[in-house]
Every structure is written in C-alpha cells, then in structure tokens.
Image 1 (tube, helix red, strand yellow):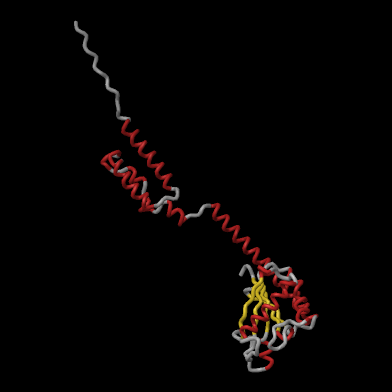
Image 2: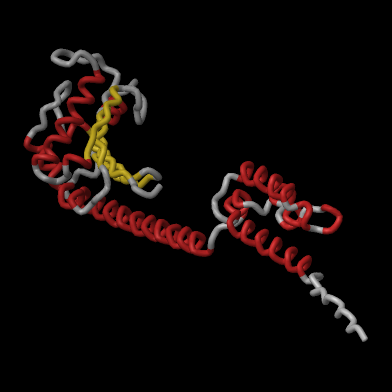
Length: 260
C-alpha cells in the first residue's frame, strides 16, 4: 500500500500586513518628531505629499497613512506655527525676570535723581543761588538750569572765577551720577557782536566752556558728556523784556535717564 504524500503545510502570513502598517506609522511618527524642529514649512509640505504618494499603497483602499497622520497645512501644527503661537517656559520666565529687573532699575534711578534734586535745591538755596538756578526732575532726566548771568558776561563765553565756584557747588553731586550728561546752551534774541557770528555760535561756545571745565575737574568722564546749542530757538519766556531775556540766556545741565 502506497503511503499518501503529506500535504505541504503553508505558514500563515496574514500578520505581515498589520506589521507593515505599524512600521509605516512608526516612520510617520519619526517624521512628525523631525518636523517639530525648525524646518521650512513649505518644503516640508512638499516632502510630505511626495512621501504620501510613495506609501499610498500601504493602507487599505489606497489612502495615504502618512497624509492622514501629518497635516501641517490644515491644522497649523508645524514648526512655524509653534514658534509663533507658543513660547517655551524658559523663554517666558526669562522675559518676566528681565522685565522685573528693568522696573527695579527704573525705580532705583528715579529715587536717586529725586534725592539729588532735593539736595541740590537745598545747597543752592544756602549759596543764595536759588534765584539764578532751577532744578527740576522731568521725564527725560534731571535738569539743572543756570542763568548765564552767574556764568558769563554779556556776549562772552569765558567763565569767571565766580562761575567756576558755582559749578563747583554742583560737582560733588554730579560725580555720584553714572548717567550721560548733556550741556545745552541758550541765548536771547539780541544780535551778537564779534567774535561770534550768531547766537548759535555763542550758545555752543558757552556749552563747550562748561563741558571743558567739568571734564578738566574730573567731574564727568569724557565719554559721558556732550553738548547741544539752541541759540534763541527755545526761549523759556518772552524776549520782549529785560527780565525775560535774562531768563532765556542760560546753560542747562541735563542728567539723562537711562530708563524712561
């Protein structure tokens, strides 16, 4: 009796299809993770479309698994959208800390200028210069206004010994300030005589004289001081009276605020 041939056994390969789909999904996950980095969104969308075409046969019915998983264009979840819509906790915390530091520095600067302003007013009053000077705290800084009659002779830019003495009374307080300083010169509308061709030149010469003295006496460092010349363009009061013209002839020492 002949022995029947044993039927050849076939291994069930049905598990390969879900395994292939799983690998495709894992690959899609890695693509998503890669896209979270800073990537050109337009180029990545093009890459996604091409990648979806290649793997379109992996899903039943020919639909692209990759296309359904990665959808940057519709939902705005790409790298560019993340950068615009979200900030990392570290960046937010750093920004808040910097804002606090700026506010604290601003308060300290305002307090310092207020104290200097009060001390200057008291000292100038004691020197009987309060009628010829004005100290005011403004939004851009501390303004020390000096009438030109305590610094210069009419039409002149050479400081007298009395003028230097007046500046010396300010020196101690100016040395304590680390902010930049501007020396601004002003005149009245009266026509000027030689050697100055105009009130512009006279106001500039007076500002330079004050600046040079403060630098020579090491009150303010060279890299923290500058001048401005306004001539008769910024009067404080009328130029129609003797008293008004005297008020308009002045030199201002402006200690500029860092935090405004």
